[in-house]
Structures are given as structure tokens and as C-alpha cells.
Image (cartoon, rainbow, N blue to C red):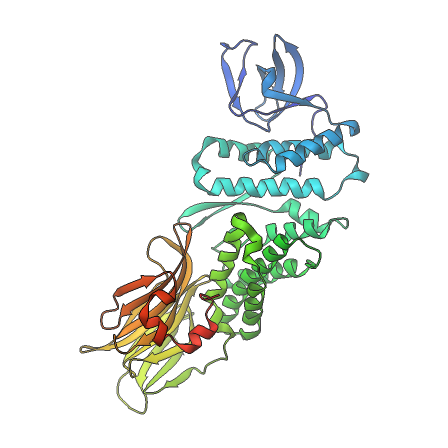
Length: 469
């Protein structure tokens, strides 16, 4: 990380700086340079610098005001650190800040180096990766800044998530911060948060590889002493622990291991977050944890047997093909063929099963993905029993869950609660659906706006749901 820098150097401070063949504005352009590029200065003539660009392996001329000359001696270190601190808090100047950070590490005597420059460079690398994954992902500036950062040993990982490419910083410098004995609790916490982001876990990892990764992520977070942290960082830490614990619960459930203890801790960590301390910038971290923990909340309930009697119905879960669970609904105390049957590769939360409509319908929570929980509705019609799946969202949803919240017998309406992230925005909805055709009729942002919720909401749902917290 961070190769040696030339002793007589300049750093490009303006994007789209033209490197020309001669010290004239109309001279041919050799290449375009971007902020953060490091050049060796060889001469100065008529307001232009004669430089050599080692990354592109060519020399040329550029305007003097497009670069800043820097020194890399011990005497230059304080000034370089001051610029690094300024650029850390300047969105859009990440590649420039990384370049100044590299210059400071080169200039500062080894005995005086602390965790600060490494943590700041890592923070800017993480922010640059977020820009490359967001709306600006197609801009030439972002791609160029990534190339500039790479020359200092700042590496990124890319993979596809939710239909688009996700760019993530590999976290090398965060790991270095955690290994430095002089790092402050706040710096260590920031490093642990940078190394445990849920959106930077490769979705292609299988169950066997994912389990030790999640265990390591939790170990990093648990290694941070949070009593001396700022209120913002403390809430971020609780939210991240909750999200990682939710991932562990999902993995445990897929491997048919006990989940109650881990799930309860995930709930406790989520409830320890103070969302008002996070502000708008970090609110998404809390909402992500909320959706992930909401998806696995049934794991904290007492385990249900494979065959569950829900008079007048009986629900049975049996193995199907490798990795599958098959759910069968029968009429209790009656023989004959099953009323309905469906198989899934997801986690079937049998303890969530709720009969309603005088035994003519039943709801069941099924979680096919780590942060996605659906609702299966078994219901009777004149043509027999059928199973419909209600998803948390329909308009490009990313993560979420849907809860059975009750049943209104007078209007024959199913009461649902959803929390979902769609098109990048968080939504919480309370809805009433017709039972006979499972079509939505009403929805509101709070249950108080729906008359049937006031009288017929399920007591257990009201007691345990996260949608009302």
C-alpha cells in the first residue's frame, strides 16, 4: 500500500487537466489528467510546468495553476496533514485527498505515524466506492478517480447486486487501523464499521463460506468498546451489530441450528439504537438493520414442531429435494388428501402460522432471502384450497418483510403490515386486503387511519412487531 513518491512532485488539483506537447494552450493534448494524479516536476516555463507522468509513462506540459507542488520531507508533514484533514470532509475530492494522504505518510517520520491518516484515506476510499455504485457510477470523473486511487494501492471489489454493479473498498487500511495499538476507540469503531458493511458482502457466497464471514464480522464489532464512543458512532455500532446478527440467524435457520438466542440479541441491539442520533446521513444504516431484523424476528419465538395443530387445520413441514422444505396443510382429525402443499428453498417460520376466518384461511411467514420475508396465505374458495404469496413490495424492491397483522371477520379483510425499501426509498404501509381474491383495498401510513386495524389487529403482532416501534 502507498508506493514511494518522487521528491520533486506536484499533485493535480483540477479534473480534466490537459497534458500538452508544448507550453502553449493550443499545443496538442497528450492525455487528460484528473485530481490526485502525482507528477514529477522537471522544469517551469511561461506559466507551464514540464512534468513526467509515471502512470501514463509520458512527459509533457500543463498549466501551473492546475497543480500544487508538494514536498515529502519531515518539515512538510504538518502542512500535508492539514490538507488531508480538510479534504476528508470534502465530498468529491476523494482521489485528491488520497493523494495527499499518501504524500503525508511518505513525509512523516515512521515514529510519528498514528492511525489517523490510514483511517482518513480508508474513509475517502469507501466514499469513492459509494459514488461509483450510485447515480454517478457512469460519470467519467468517478471512473477516473478510481484509477487515480488505485495507483496508491487502494483496491476495490465489484460484484452484481440487485441488478447493478456494486463497488466496495477492500478495507485493507481499516484492517491496519484495527491492528495499531495507538488507535482511538472512535477510529477502531469506524474501521470495524467499514469492514462489516452488509451491502459489501458478495451475494454469490454460498452457505458454507458465508457462515465464517458473518462470524468474523460480528467478532470485529464485538471487539469495539462502545462506552467512550460518540452517540452517533454508538448507535451506528448497535445498528450494524443488529444487521450482522440477523445474517447469522438466517444462516443458522438454513442449517437447521437453534436461532432464538442470536435472534433475541439482534432485537436487543436494534432497540439500543437511537435513530435521532444518526441524522439524515446515517439513517439508512438504521433502516437497513430494521428491515433485516424485521425479516428474522420470528426466529426469537419458541420453536414450533414440524407438525403443528392449528384447529381446525394442521400444518406439516417435511424435507423435499436437497435444500427444500415442503409445507403441507391438512384438515385436523380428518384423513384424505392434503388441502394444499408447496415447497420452497427459503426458511419456513412455522411458529408464525396463524389460522383465521374460522379456519378457512391460514398465514405463514417464509423467508427466501437474508433480508426478504414473504407471507404465504392458504385460503379456501369454492374450487378448493390455494396458496398465494404476498411479497413486501412490487416496484423494484430491494429488501423488506410483510407481516400478518390480523383479520376483520365483518368485512372479510386481511390486515397486513409492510416495511420495504423500494427504488432506494423506505416505505412503511398498513393495508387491508380482501380475503376472497387477495386484492388490496386500503392502505395508510399508520394503522390508526384504518378502521379495521383499530378493532381486529392481532394481539401477538401488536406486541412483537417492529413496524410500530
